[in-house]
Image 1 (spheres, rainbow over the protein chains, first blue to last red):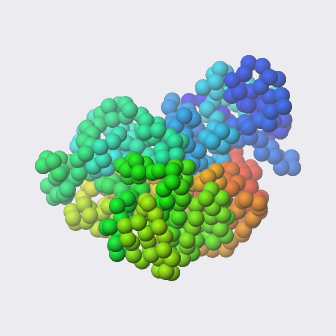
Image 2 (image 1 turned 30 degrees about the vertical axis):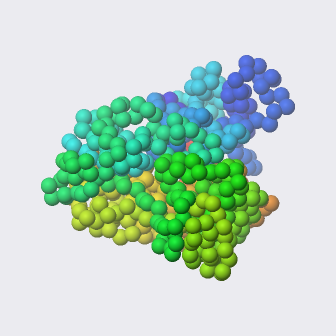
Image 3 (image 1 turned 90 degrees about the vertical axis):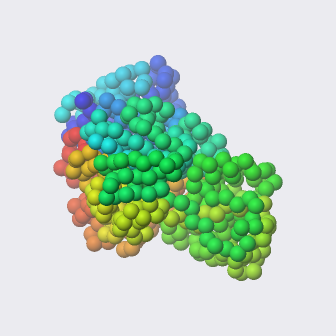
Length: 142
Length: 410
């Protein structure tokens, strides 16, 4: 299956992936409307230090420790994509304890959020990849 | 192939999902004492405070048993295992034959023998959905509740009922709250946070005798109460396995394939011991993720696969009144501590690896620390100073990162 992969050497550290992620998951159709004056809480996060930068988001692991450890059954993996049912999540953070990549984070309203490859929003295709200006994030089979 | 699973919680579900990965035809029978669809035990406190419902706390969807082709027997208890004849006798008089058996009987609340405890009318434990419902039924806005035990169960219970009762007092023999997961400094921060919600703690003390509505403590203090919750600990349910001749320590002894010492009998979850990779000990790690993964591993092996469960560690994610705590591993080693307003962090290293950590308040990306412990990552291969500040992948070498972010993650 296709996954998001990060090519660190091409990352410019422009943070566009973070903004596109926040926009794609905002439920709004206009980017300005969605993001103006908003402190974004994206599901992909750039790490940067000196001249090194790269994006981190869910790896949709073959052995998903977040799914196996989820105490409610809110995290599930179907067709290779790990998604969260925010209605069942109680915000216990066992997934934050479990994820080796630090790719599951609080959503801000008492539950957790994570990259779902944009399968549940209107984009249907990872917005971080679509908006990356330098092919530092790609969506492909490997 | 005939599979029988005794138990219907996380280990049993892990087991069912494990079997169905490789064996879609084998017959699976689940025997459950409780009369419910599989539900998440840790959610009973969330149920009481209205953060979940009985429907939402189902651990798997309504169609789970049907989709996996499970014969589910609820309200039935396994009484005896005949490991030679490979049969399980049930309390309804029936007998089930098995080719492979999983014992996932969980644990039970320990109720200490205290003088006068029998005379307390409204006395509860807090482990099952039935316990939670029974407790909920007697809660009133002016009730005084005494909780024995300042551990995970006792304090989750306190949080769950805090808005429904008049006053809560928690008594524990230990000198700090949450002694199984926190050190003294971390516990002090969490305690003062919980106290802000009106919960009163009496530590380093214990109940000597009960009368119907009051408790006399060792210190001489007398506490009046309307409702008592006993949450001093749990004991693995090992009697069934022991009766069949399996080796039992504190829990049922299992190897890294989750096999018991009996042929074709496996055990998983709170009733079983597993190998803790940090301490090197075989011990009961009564944690839901551990139960699921043990159950899954057992079943893969029951179905003829070869899977090892050799990455168990102690770990906990829990929160009280909005304050989050994540801990893992062992605190035996060299500690580095960081305190900030409302936040506490302790990293413990031993033998060149991260052995354990405590995070209170700021728990972001804690799993990066967990993986350092679980994978026994030599700290001289990463930038430990950097990762000590905040969990981050920047601390790994570019080669390691390329594998993590550019490869297919296992």
